[in-house]
Image 1: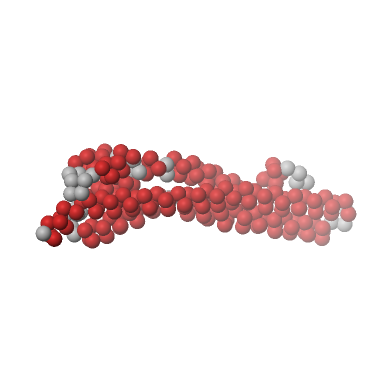
Image 2: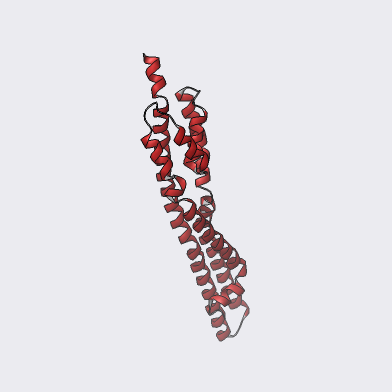
Length: 213
């Protein structure tokens, strides 16, 4: 008779083992993303401050030094901005956008798995539920002892409920984490875009003034 999580894990290992693996990997991804997506890791305050303090048409020595010393999404985008300063502003902006898309992919690393777990967890739980119900009807159909039938029915219902709950336990944290990380990455992307636009505007101001004159 299935009266505990241990019994359910033993009898429904084909459902519980994948759920356990999904849970472990999801927790690892969540903790890794919490550390990697901290604002001061993605956007170093010193480099952002240097961009804000840069004068229009001013020298970018400090920004170049800070971007070389750091390996963050902002520093890589800044290096891309400075790499193509000989290009027209529009072409430079397009090149930076290509680099920005690659940085967004890096920021979203692991979120695809969380999204998959969000849908896979309930489905695995549902599969365990259906198999538990099949066991109920199979036992009821082969046994002539009413007490044995009652025991088998109770065992199948317990297995079905435990599998359903286990699937929800795995899917709910993954869903919450995926939603929060998506919104956080969206905010970081806006900050990165703003800083790159500000840097490009200051880099090309002097050239635009000369052309106008």
